[in-house]
Length: 156
Image 1 (cartoon, rainbow, N blue to C red):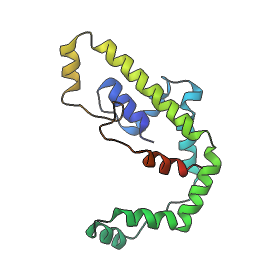
Image 2: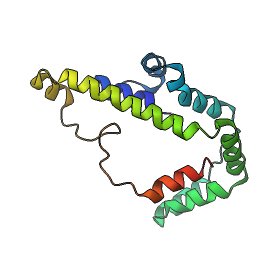
Image 3: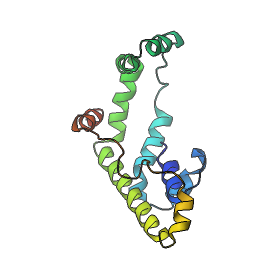
């Protein structure tokens, strides 16, 4: 998961390598809040090797401008089906809600830090540069209910 890196990058306005962010970000949250990251880390390390399409297939999907072909192939492949089923069983029914709670907590901490840092507007604007969008601000695109329903179906 890239959430710890995105969280710290947005909080401190400085780049950090993903591998270096887990322990630092974990200190900002309770064990219950951090549970989705621990679950995802465990799942990633314990699942069988993922399906990898051939280079030719990726090339053809790119030429045809049909990235959905890759997704469809991956979702119907035996290894992918096995991994998805294991993920559903191991993550549990509350995983989606736990992840949502963690994201909410991250956004709250970032908003609190931004409010604190706004005491000197020039320093804040200098630190932010031209960054106007990101994963922890109001979404720059409209997500439809169907997007959430499709994502939720993966865990039900």
